[in-house]
Length: 247
Image 1 (tube, rainbow, N blue to C red):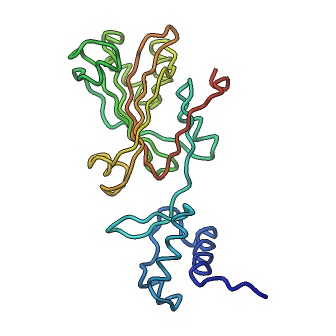
Image 2: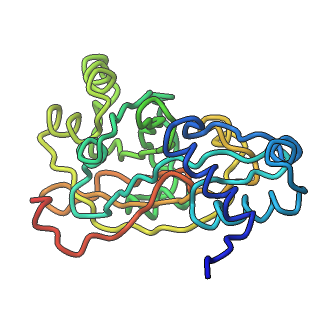
């Protein structure tokens, strides 16, 4: 006896095939429930079942008040000893790019002073960057560097190197001979802040992954406290147990 496949599964199969064929590209909005119901000649409840199935499978995401969108391919980012953002994305077929948002001198607040192991109010350099994967924004990072350790951080020639390289690791090595080693990272989930939502092209109710890192040089001295906000729908963070590949 031939098995009868429920209509909503048949609809989900057709929509999934269109996504695989590129008819609906990553980030593209799907037709409304009403339009899909008319297209497949079913009621909206059946469409909701099909949408729910595709959402559970990770093919689409539903944004309240905006609609249904094709989910982008997830990027797996290992939290290991070395800070190797660009190489990690390249290995997965993504082109990593950075846009420098701002570079300025500020006073360390409680979180920054704790992360850098310096006194409250000491002067630090803030470098904020917007990270991209294939021209799509995926992260906003704020790096704090102790000016007691890097007193000439804001020299024009140094800033020129930072703006050209757009890599913190290469900048630190080229200018100061510093290695850039991750000592610790704490990851948590939260809703995106309004300013980051604009930069990351997210709605206000979307989740992000917040990674707070303390990075040291080859002598074990703290050189950076970093706070990175990743798009929760694009990034998968995991802790790398075997760190030999980062040496």
